[in-house]
Length: 589
Ligand code: ADP
Ligand code: ADP
Image 1 (cartoon, rainbow, N blue to C red):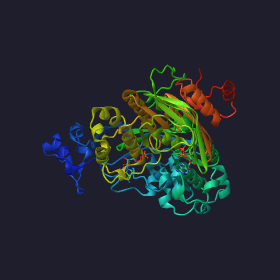
Image 2 (cartoon, protein in one colour):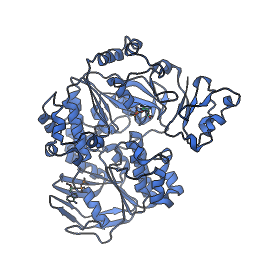
Image 3 (cartoon, rainbow, N blue to C red):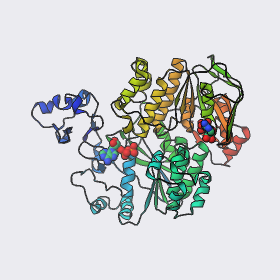
Image 4 (spheres, helix red, strand yellow):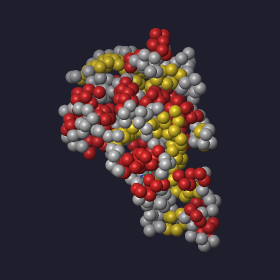
């Protein structure tokens, strides 16, 4: 079976010579394989396509994909977004008593699956011109679990609730204060119970527009679990939360699954591993097609994901496997220090942070961990010389390039224009192309306007821009947010390589342990009481840094026997107690 997909957002018939049509051997012999459609974009008839792939190579915008798929998928199509549009094959089926996880790249159909399962959209089974009725859909799946599931959804017997992905958009949808939003939805429990569970006491009388990302995330989760539903969908519940909050939310979602059906999309693999029981891996080609593989037990699923190869399906979805070391990297860092600082103190009327003396070396990527509102940004402002500390100081201020946690796409123009305005020379260098643009997959974003980028796209652009500015220290605040797991690994490698090769240093604030493991040469640990007072210590070597940090959040990791990847221990399990006693929270040897 062969499918032809036109990526609408890349196709620009006004800027090309319609190469897809011009060079098609079939078109040249008079067969109408590619014709110009009414919307001014080419249409490819799959039945007439010989699969030569010439259009794929000739299209200057790489907007055409011609893909051969295994024949057994043919009858399993769930949904297709129009002619030459994205196709989704198979669907997950949630079960009571289990947290069903979904793991796959962005643009592969996860959100579409949510929509189909919740009844927001009826699967067209590939027949987008003459879509089937609900009855026909049910008939198609008769005798399956999916039939039972959808039958109840269509009959109105199954209610669903969704925690949407982009919590930063909440303030534009709900005006007013948190209390008003939550009061309206208190069905399953009282608002006060949810406020207690998610530690929202301090923000309940604030308006949504004043909340931080982590607070918005917890409000969105509270609003979802307050509703009385049968199926709960959580689209990335961890973004903007610190690790302590991530684990807390994971426990809340787990307890919800005891009586309800729960489906979670999550890209923080340590949290997904801790949270889910079964996982559906989704593979395919971004924007072209996605296939839900058979469900796997969580440990096997994540190992398979890291390995990049699904043995049962005989599908390779990544060239290389991702490996973790169970030993800390040797701390034989040869480089000289970029800056040494004495103990620093900074005070605002309601907040005070103290950072112990330390030094950051040239070429080093320092992972910065700790809760939000603990003084990390304040510290960096001192390094940059934009803020005078109340005590101590540094001799030489360094130049800082900063990627904030919340990215505001306020540039009115395309991604390419933004780079040309801000960092023209570097943007046009071979180094940018090979070390930043290529691994961060920027190529297809250049022509897009900033305001039209998805969360993950905007994140990649913001990281690239930050790394392109001339500076001594690069501060990246939560670069993993909205990136899929694969992109997180690529981003970690990119940041590290750029620092090493250009002899600069990075401070990377993040809460995803796998990401931190990959990005950091050393670790700075902030602790204290968020919004009141903070203490910054380090940078420490990885073993000491992880131990200090994980001790403060009371979490230990064991190692998977097969892959050595870190896995969160159950609290008070034998391993948890043993490791705490030995003071080894992360590395096993
Ligand atoms: P994910 O949640 O895995 O990121 P989505 O389900 O949102 O993926 O989208 C999968 C693909 O389907 C994307 O390429 C997207 O462009 C396309 N798509 C999503 N919604 C629509 C729609 N309403 N019309 C046409 N294409 C769509
Ligand atoms: P982090 O980067 O760890 O999230 P910040 O350094 O941004 O933390 O902020 C720490 C605390 O200081 C927060 O409670 C924040 O509200 C407060 N704060 C930050 N900037 C100011 C300021 N200019 N005036 C008053 N308080 C501030």
